[in-house]
Image: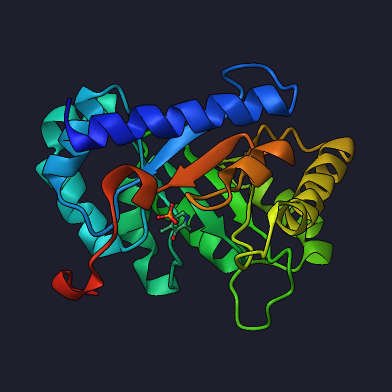
Length: 235
Ligand SMILES: *Cc1c(COP(=O)(O)O)cnc(C)c1O
């Protein structure tokens, strides 16, 4: 077994244990393998081990990788989880299946306008700044409902849920307290008529706390692919 396959099985075991500990239904948390900074061969290894959904942060790197893996395109799901500048929406609209990082209407409108007619609607999560970091991306929680309604009305997007990236917490309880805010917002948006099914939260270091708090999708990079080396990639 390759290192990546071995790591994938260990992460899946962590997810299953977290789901069981939380008393949730087995299989209710999806694993997104974050392959940023790793090449197409790493994605092929993970795919061979049964992984189909991959997350990328840097648009040009992602487009190059998606192109290099064109032979697998119909079997792979590509999720954009990095910040999107308004002049970079076109490659996102043309290459990805999902975007987790919509935090303003202008970006959503451009993605909808630029989504090719022969592709399925772009699946979207709204990024929420749940811990109030002033420099962080993400819509303020009190603005999420208005943005969600506006995004849900765009023709070429399908609003699926919320995403958050809280600051690392000192312990499990502190992490849960922050994730719980995202969960409460998710529940409140659903109570107000938005049919959200995806709560994208949890990474290598805090996926157990996220699952405890209701995450339906964890984004895991280093625990699968190893430590990232930002020095060798261009962004
Ligand atoms: C890099 C990244 C991840 C994965 O982080 P790890 O700590 O390597 O698991 C998850 N989500 C986002 C938004 C990221 O940028």
